[in-house]
Length: 188
Image (cartoon, rainbow, N blue to C red; front, side, top):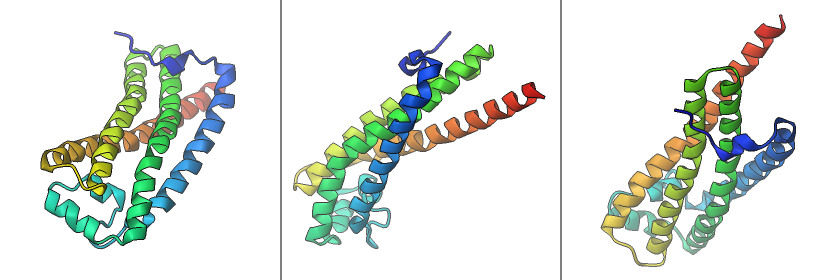
């Protein structure tokens, strides 16, 4: 079996030119997003919007919303909307890195490792879908609708999203370190 990701088709000579602006945009947008949702961090929601996304019950979600003043609610609504852009840029940058590492493993004849990194690249797009579900549920709660069952969906979507968005960069950094070390050994 040979799993491939569309980003593997970007020619090696073009990768840096494509990746660096994408990474810069992702980091800038992530920073703006973190600053935007910071007012949502309270004793009831210590992790700001992430706490809200993992509220298991409607009562818990309402406790969090009650802890926010009007400014925090507005920041939250803007931040949840802005997160759609954040999800796309962040996951694209990580997927690019994972896909190109998959290609490097493939070129080194390590098909199993290539498949693992390609799957992680695809996983970044799954993370976006989970983030869309999470954001839709959180926005509906902020607007006064949404029920208990949707909170359960949001909880699991949030956990999967966070796992993929944390594992993706970890895989990218680990793969880069191994590839760099292997390249150093070959040059000796």
